[in-house]
Amino acid sequence: MSNYVIFVGSLRKASTNRQLAEAFIHHLPEGDTAAVFDRLRDVPFYDEDLDVPGQEPEIVRELRAAVRDADGLVIITPEYNHTAPAVITNAIDWCSRPMGSGVLMGKPSLVMGFTPGPRALIGAIAVLREALVTVQAKTVPTDYTWGDAYPLLNGRHPKDVDEVVGILHKAQSELRALVDAAPVAIDPRTGDAAN
Image 1 (tube, rainbow, N blue to C red):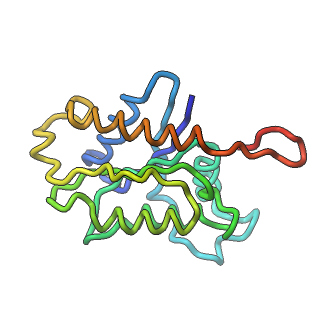
Image 2 (image 1 turned 30 degrees about the vertical axis):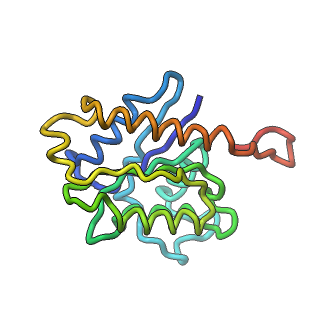
């Protein structure tokens, strides 16, 4: 049984990427769970003056705890101007600190998304993969992206589109394999498994 936290790169309530997150949750294997971290819009831009241990903004503590407590991170995003949305890169910035021990270190991660254009998120995926590798997250190697999303969906919710559902199952399987392969951290103070 795995638990995932989802970052959605589009803040718009009716976005196709938010719907893709809903489809990801809907089609999880029995026993697995996932939840969208719905407060990315409230996270301030990364600022070392705010990132003082014990004095971080409450929303930052919530963000880091959500990632720390999850078995894996799922980023579902559009592409803006051939790059990743700032709301996603900002969340990665906060979760990568403190350097060398941020909550993304070793975290199994999956990046996926829809875009209405034909390029299938080439720029966003490149930026996010580089950022996740830099912070030492473990990323699913396959790109699960769709260009020309509107004709594919044709007004349907992604959870009802067979092509999308089949690919979601493959993505979930790859992410689960990374989670299962992740070493279990042991708290040296107690000898118990640490989150």
